[in-house]
Structure formats: C-alpha cells, structure tokens
Image 1 (cartoon, rainbow, N blue to C red):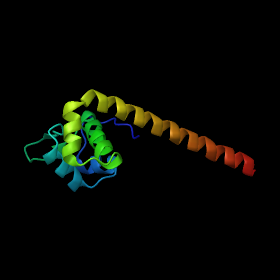
Image 2 (cartoon, rainbow, N blue to C red; image 1 turned 90 degrees about the vertical axis):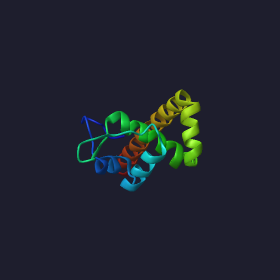
Image 3 (cartoon, rainbow, N blue to C red; image 1 turned 60 degrees about the horizontal axis):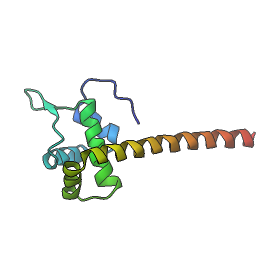
Length: 113
C-alpha cells in the first residue's frame, strides 16, 4: 500500500494510487454519501488521506467482494465498524502475503545460485 504523505491529492493522483479510472471516482462520489472531497473555487476535487482510505473501503466492497453499489452503501450504513475491521484485516493479510512472496523470491534466488 502506498504511503500517503501529502495533505491533499487531486483526482488523477487518487486514480493512480488506487488503480481505478477517474470516471469511477466521480461516479462513486455521486453514489456514496461518505465520499466527499473538498473542492476549490474552480470546482477541482481535493482528497485527503482519509478520503482515500474511505474510497479503498468502497473499492474493497465493490471490486473485491463483488457487492452492487446499493448493497455496498447499505453495508456501510448498517455495519460501518464491521466493514472497517474486516477491511483492516484484509489489508494486513495482503501485506503479509506480499512479504511472504518477496521472501519466497529471495529464497529462490539463493537456491538458484
């Protein structure tokens, strides 16, 4: 997971970080009341790291769990704490898996030599 070290990110940056099109971000913003980026006088969106984490949770529900947008919105409304905890566990497991894969590659290189 990429470290979020800036205070605000533009929509193109967020799309790159999350690996989704900007149009998806715009659409999700219209469908999910929890996605509310700040806007400047020129109506340019600025996302905080918290906004990006919220979008990651939506991504998890929609893209990884396969929920339809209505079902994902309902899950967030009814079980926000449960979603947050499950999301954290899944992210930790992904990190552990990546570490193990890196270790496996290193072991294969050692055995190759």
